[in-house]
Image (cartoon, rainbow, N blue to C red; front, top):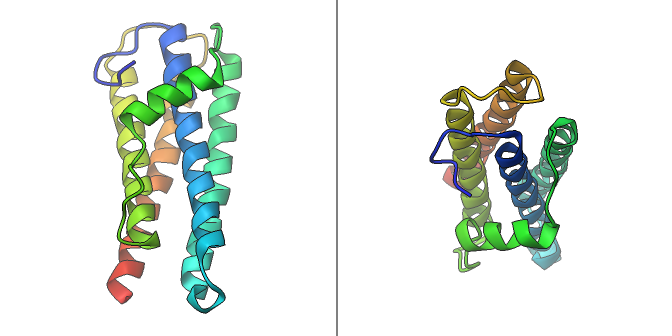
Amino acid sequence: MSVSYPVASDHQLARLLQIGMVLEEVFEARAHNHYEALDESERDPDIVELLEHAAEESAEHRERLATLVDELDADTIAYEEIEMLVSARYEADGDFDGVLYDQLCNEETAYKFYDDLITAIASSDTTFSVDRERLIETLRTIRDEEAEGVEAVTKLMEER
């Protein structure tokens, strides 16, 4: 499943939205894991706030995507199958130079995914069972929030 081509059906759109849901779940888990891995002495308030915000935002994004999937006239596939697709294409190997770099990678990956998905939907002439304008607006909002995340992490990295 690729976002390199126009989205041709509700079925394909549902799969791509499910990939986004799994990505968000992975990023939420990674933010929680980073927080848990920090020693008390390393719990810089700005980094803690960044991780908490990232986890909350990922959960909100997952909910928005799930709402869209529920409205589509398409069957969903098992979480495990989507998780394998995400692991193969988007998951990092976990070898990062710290919490902030990993978080930057997460934000950039999510931004790129949503940007590509918006392009794939916009280049399609398919009529979906969900309102196209609302679909694209929802995805643009999520993408813009990911861009804000990239900026926030970058700023924090520059201050360190």
